[in-house]
Image (cartoon, rainbow, N blue to C red):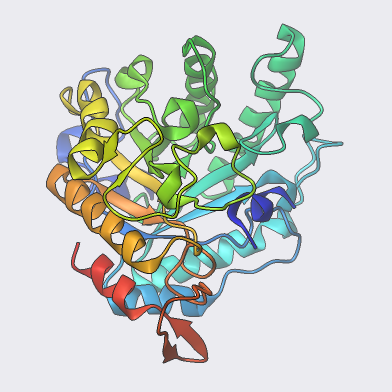
Length: 364
């Protein structure tokens, strides 16, 4: 199943374990959080909003055994609510998240809870929402924002007693391309305030603008982490992926690494540094932390090109001190059961493991 199709269908004391003592339970304008260099995977069981889906304890066990310490949980609010009645939340349907939080605690994996679909927006299929957070009449956008804040208040209340070292919140996935960030800043500030009404010390993550690719300086004073992406160039990361608009591909040629795009521009480690690291310096120069919330390579890209590209990305993030969360652990972008036609897999507990990719990740 491809990535977008899959998507479509006591607290203050704990803060001291993650933040310096001068930052406990406060987010002054001049204060930026400090985070470990978390590395791990996206676990996607609730990304499509399927009721009854459960996270697998074995995923947490394997990650811990390998030495990873982070899992991003992209969730659709449809897993516990409906677009027909945004304000009705079924608490019994949140039990899979309760279980995941316990798995994370048990195996020492920090969980980052992300609303991949939030009332009023999803990076794919946003038109399925009754009202929209962006680019709609003011009344529509306010209705959506009220519902989105309601969901974050509910989640903040439910998990108020979960220590910050175990759980952080990621507001919502990949805001759209935008010429002006004013609307996004308003949305993010509203959601941040809703969370902090209930859980003032909770670590909060906001994705960059332009589907996670652009820093948001308008949020610098909020004392949050900003999440970037590692999917450029798309001609490598999403080769032949039918759900990606053709205009997003730099070339349609069979991938190699390094690789020139259709304009003759060479994509290599230096180009990646310019596009994915230097672009964020206005934020990082002011002390704001950055984490790579998603990255990965579709299984139709030749393995040699995939690993070469990954090697350069991982080296740049290690140099920058950024952690990362690969999409995904199991599946077409992952290290387990990825169904790549040119990989000699290792049998692993009834699954197929891409050992070369795993070793590359562990080295970085």
